Length: 93
Image (cartoon, rainbow, N blue to C red; front, side):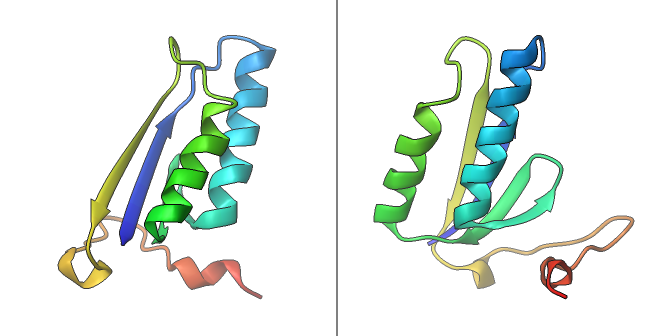
């Protein structure tokens, strides 16, 4: 299924920086980084469960949040860029 993940990590201390760094690294293993705190990609149900398990080790339930939007397929999602359009394939050299 096609997934868009958005996270919000509170940067109130050095621990917040560490959480942010780890959340970014874990999400990058599974999806494309499209904006500051936003990833997208095609994941199976098993991959989503594994992703959640890995993220649960780091996020602080009382301070940080992660939202996952799911769609059956990317083609069912209308995507518009307002302003600078960033192509997810631009990460490749």
